[in-house]
Amino acid sequence: MNPGTNSQPSCTLQPSSLVEIQAAEARLLVQTYERNPLLFVSGQGVHLRDEQGNEYLDLLSGIGVCALGYQHPAVTAALQQQIHGLWHTSNLFYHRGTSELALRLTEITGLDRVFLCNTGTEAWEAALKLTRAHARMLRSQGKTIGTGILAMQDSFHGRTMGSVATTHKLKYREPFEPVMPGVSFVPFNDVEALRAAFSTDICAIAIEVVQGEGGIRPVSAQFLAAARELCDSTGALLLLDEIQSGIGRTGKWCAYQHYGIQPDVTTLAKPLAGGVPIGAMLCTEQAARAFTPGMHGTTFGGNPLACALAIAVIDEIKQSHLLDHVASLGSYFLARLRELQTRFPCILDVRGMGLMIGVELETEALARQMLQGMMERRIVLNRTHETVLRFLPPYILSRADVDRTLHALSELLATHSTSPSPHASVVAGETIHG
Ligand SMILES: *Cc1c(COP(=O)(O)O)cnc(C)c1O
Image 1 (spheres, helix red, strand yellow):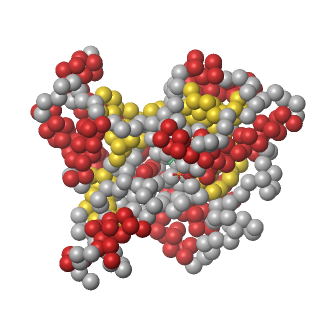
Image 2 (spheres, protein in one colour; image 1 turned 45 degrees about the horizontal axis):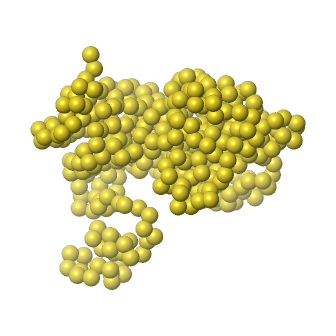
Image 3 (cartoon, protein in one colour; image 1 turned 30 degrees about the vertical axis):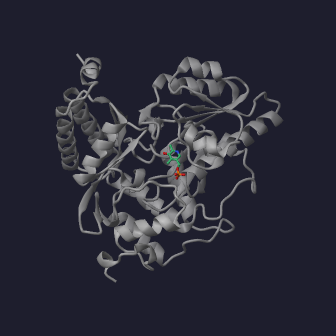
């Protein structure tokens, strides 16, 4: 079949060109995504290749998932070995991977127990269910604690019903109402508002240590400390969502380790198994007592394949000292972006930790334009919270890759700033630092 000559792509049995695939998806898929018009067919290291053989520098790693890039020898070796072993046995039986992975996860998070599942939202649901069960357990012991949950404005915790109930954006929540009741939203990093909203009605405070979809915003040290202190005062649980920021993304295993504060519960997912679906909810011994056999579960969770790959990812991050690399390259990336900010006032803010970085631009139109320009220069990234360019590159990124990115970005910004912008002078006055 010659894809270039097919005038009715929607009738093609085996769509293969980008145009044919677009037509087939438009006809066959539930329309939940707006995809970029790119058809990737392979990847190597930090690069993706499209069907025409063009190479792209990937600064998004499949939304923070492919943290060791593509075809990493440690990951492919684990996969190859597992091909001849078991992929699934169900949670009715033992296999070797579960405890080996749990040992590593408890060691790197400082928490005591693990529940393994398949996605981020599923890990977050486990955290929410544990929270409610824990409060019930406390009530049965005579303590006064309610069922309310304090979540943050601009939060994102996933797409299932409990997760959307704790997700702030109305667009993600409202069409599905009624969602799980009992959630109130507190302005992120507003300590006074947190204290005012907290009472014995509350059984958990839920925080992303670095808000991802909310525009790459790290929690403040005072806010996190206040949340810890409030939870300690009543027995409520501190839930820290590290699905995007965990497993080395910020230069530590978990972003909360930058603050010296331990949660009662944390959730991990995106980069944990190098591209294969996995999720993990970790908690303290005390919180774990709220779950007894049969109360919660999953068919696929913690299967031998996902465990083998997660073990390989964790061991490779340790052996290749990738936390140090992420921390130092991240500092370099941030410093160079801040330099760029002093030259281009349309950059309102540069935020982040390690290789989780956001560049907030003046307008949504400008952010779209920059993204488009970067794609044309074969550099993949995305946009979050409308105006923020988001960088979640593989941990194996090099200084040369960062330099190439900065070069492309500054060229694009220079082109933009030569075209008239009605707000330019006002914004310049606000953002130039002394
Ligand atoms: C991506 C994400 C989730 C949801 O994970 P899924 O695997 O898409 O269900 C939850 N919380 C945070 C902070 C995330 O970034």
